[in-house]
Image (cartoon, rainbow, N blue to C red):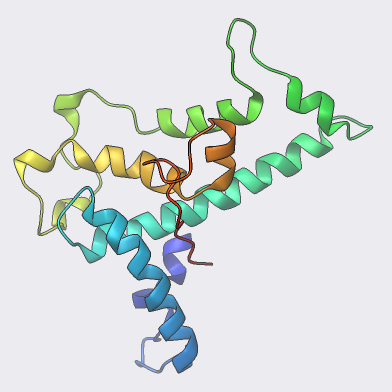
Length: 171
């Protein structure tokens, strides 16, 4: 759903009329450059991968906020402190850490199966056999590294790969 609000889908309509004023278009382009730089850490410069990373990052942010809201309303007394301490037996992860683990597991696959399963990804012009393992890493690490909550949960030092000093945020 977040892809419906990226530049090729929202900035102009079917009649090619602009919906964004100049400042909005400039701000979107400026913020999307941050994501482009992150994509380049994994793949050659690629507009399709950048748009996907922007959408995945926005979606993860919304999903995590919704999860936190749900935690606050699960119990009749809204005891967030109690809920935040609940974990799965035998695992040393908080429920919010498990949210991030579950997100990452969505993208699990065997190394040889990283063959660009997404239909849009097959169109990526920079694809090569040497890069086939990088897209799943970008799908997981890209959105997670831009969430301050992830870095706090897993104690990632500022400036590390999973907690860059400058985080990308489009919306």
